[in-house]
Image (cartoon, rainbow, N blue to C red):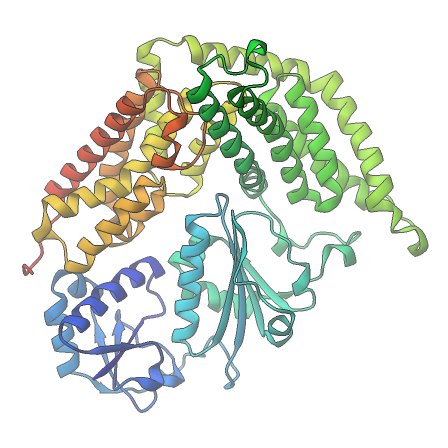
Length: 557
């Protein structure tokens, strides 16, 4: 028997993903085939309490299944669904999200600040939902390794909707003239159905920046400070990762004085110099792409130059923030203010805006911002380097707990940006605490599935194995399926374990020069064995606490 799995429109996508995994596992055990298209199915199982409005289900047998019953007793839930399925009747008084009866062509773009987890998880959620509706879907990912699954010009031409789930600014010029809807990766992942409903209602024709250089920004297209910051962080990360790891390798080869002039000519000295150069560019890249997010290409060079001036003055990440926003909004204001005849309009982005923007931003940075901000950063760096153990424990617990609040959301990213930004000021202890805590939730959930097997379904135990691997790679989002199923208990226990790991790391003065990589960044850790111990203690605390407070399943497997 072929089974098609779908869900009620109001069901979150993270929970939907976990429900699909559970049902697929049980169906496989009972020798049923799960198909991707409703047309191929003998019966459709709908998770939730509301039948979806899907024309592909007409003529099929369907069964509504309570999602909690699937988690608690998946075998009996599947058996009951198969035995009580009825003919599908399309819901009345509900307009389908797509008014046309023809198959829709959807293209989508996903991008998150780190370009690792949410980029690909949201892409999978979008693709799964679109296929369930019977639409043609192509999802292009903008990750740290570049563009994945690129959308061709023909696919753009055929598209009925461009669905953009991005937390950072990404080039979209190739979609000019197409209906476009923008949202975040978190909403695309957790509330896919609702976002697509909004998309078909609120999508607006996208015009490339080159065509609207003098047009006011519409209300629907406004971007917040958070998105500008995350665009800068996303493009800064490769500089920090490459620089930090190369310096660490240099120290392994030549000791902590590998960069001393007496070692000139050695491999360690050369690698240390390369890494230091990468570090020297991180603030410039950050400021440049913050400005790019605000003013597009004309702001990029101005932001880079402002960031270099901030870095040279010792203003650190705080100076980079000032430089990026200053450059972006000044260039944007100049672009709006300066009106040129069409014959001279090409001079504005390549001559007038860079010249005036750089001069204005440079003068403000040198005469107004750099000196006081550098003093603030110097004081902060000295305080962090000389703080007592009690203060270090408290700060480590705070940033560690923040990393576990929303698994890649704004609170998590605020703590992450704090740790990453201080690397530019040669303060490396907060970054170590941040990464240690960020690894705790997924590893802790894996530990819980090992020590309380009877409280988890077979699918959840398999998910625990994947969560463990993701945790080792510092991908906190590996715990999201568990959060979706039991948010309060998972988040509470994760915060406790993350705070403990962060406090231990900061309290012992462990440093880390790389902002990402998990176990692969151990070469950049000052005390790797003790650091692993801090992560292990936090993870075990989370795992044991969750294993204790998690309710038992109604039926054991």
